Length: 115
Image 1 (cartoon, one colour):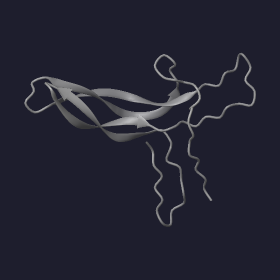
Image 2 (cartoon, rainbow, N blue to C red; image 1 turned 45 degrees about the vertical axis):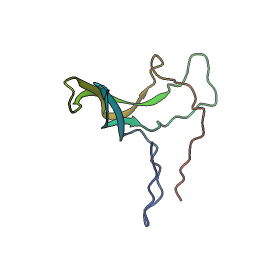
Image 3 (cartoon, one colour; image 1 turned 90 degrees about the vertical axis):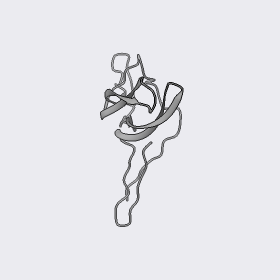
Image 4 (cartoon, rainbow, N blue to C red; image 1 turned 135 degrees about the vertical axis):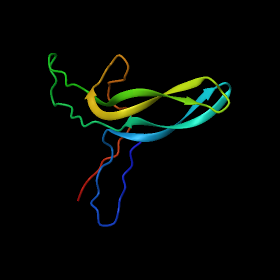
């Protein structure tokens, strides 16, 4: 969910690195739904595949992860609070194959060039 912002007089730069970004998510309680503003980690981590990989030297895949906490939101007219995740900071760290797909990205990625 990264974007490149080009401003007159500034050089072109990539905005696909791992960072916090604001999103709006729906939460439901007591049959009512509200949208809450929160933060998530988004972006890509720099990775170069080696030319040769032996059976002992697999390159560690890094993904955009963060420290998370949970906050509680009370929807008007409902005594039951709803907890939702909030990313506190984001960084590239080792991919956890137990909860994340650590294989190659199946789609196309934009490239950024600076002239």
